[in-house]
Length: 194
Image (cartoon, rainbow, N blue to C red; front, side, top):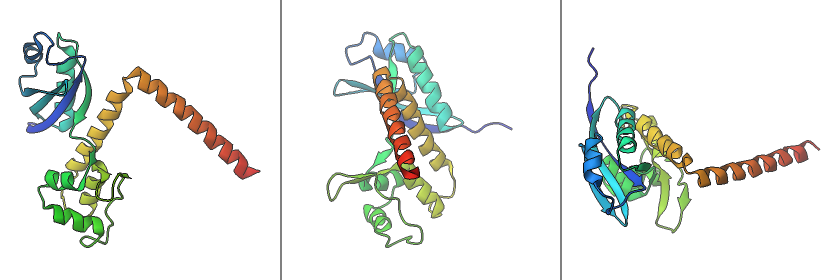
């Protein structure tokens, strides 16, 4: 049985290169990124991919491999679309009206299964949600039929954590904080048993 390939759209954000990098576009093209459009914003290089593959994971992983095997020595910093979304971004990704999303959030529609809580609220009108949690809610609420969207959201969240872990300074900082947190938890458990 032949695997069906779909076209997946995503963006790779690159490190160690900028618009002045010699032979940037040619090197990426020769490495297999002939299905990506190179963009420059604020000194950063972005590759907008339309890649055919059997899954989003296969598409993204092969694109990362192509970039990192290119002669320009670029590394991938992250993969977009982001996991953090606003109400407007949720509506845009789902191709629904913002008012519909607002009704879900307020519990005025689909109120048997409450909409996920925002992860942060900077201002009264700008809360942020995790896309993965929103998509899981959509699936549980039977607003999407296939779980592929939820699996893709989980993959994108996970790959970005993995890519972040390659930053040695950030990794050391996380390990330090995790060690302090575990010590704090242990002390809490000891106090509870006294």
